[in-house]
Image 1: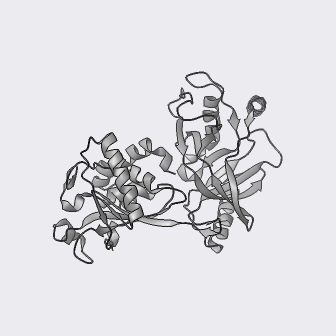
Image 2: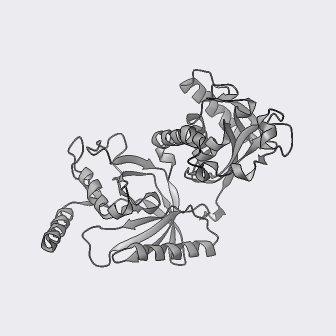
Length: 368
């Protein structure tokens, strides 16, 4: 049995050595400190496979490799790239970066339905490098090392750790590995990251919060109330229609990573902006579609975007209210992170989960 396994390993090595490795530049380094790099990554297109459990991690390589070495509708060979990406935050998803000459439109469709093609939008990541073969213990050690460096330098991260393996599988000596993670705070052109806030209401704030929490570039999402006339309202007062407030989310985002137009695109495509004071079975003025802006610059962007999407997608039926934000009131603590804390709640299972699946499928490029 050992001889068979040994022979198979060398056969695979021989096959991969005969394949070209695409040498694309996927990022540029913004800053270096304490043995790590802060990088600005370009938009990346992935072919990936998510195993049912991490024990199948090693088998995932061949699953995706089969696609790029001809297991697709055109029997097309796609150049293997370096590094191979293992997304530990997503059940050890195995992802191959597609060469830059490809788009989602011109990539051949995989024969294997388990292979997913998607685009990840540009992002800022921190990376720490090490050599040799990697394993779970080494990876945990490097994650802790990277986390401590970021903490010491007051750099926030999104906990979406990935393993990058360069020149896999055939390089035995001094193989290059990296642990990377998306960061929310960096220096860029000697300036702090430019955080902005926008206030969106599209029905129940549990839904809006869940849709935006994992969007690339979004730092924080807080559920609350705005647009009404009473200070510090309770949830009971709002749902009884006593306050004129809407259920909204305060969304804090890095405008260097995601633009307001992208936020608006996600907003309009994840709720129905054509139904007055309701979303599905949720009926009432507090469930109205509403955008609350901070200044005239934001107002112009919102007004122009809404007018365009109203004409192009909604046949002039959009009823979304656009108002200046006067004051935002945070909702009770049990409303915060509601979907993440209560995924088996009947409302979450029947309403929010399908909405999230649809959002991630239709708007995959905006999500981690």
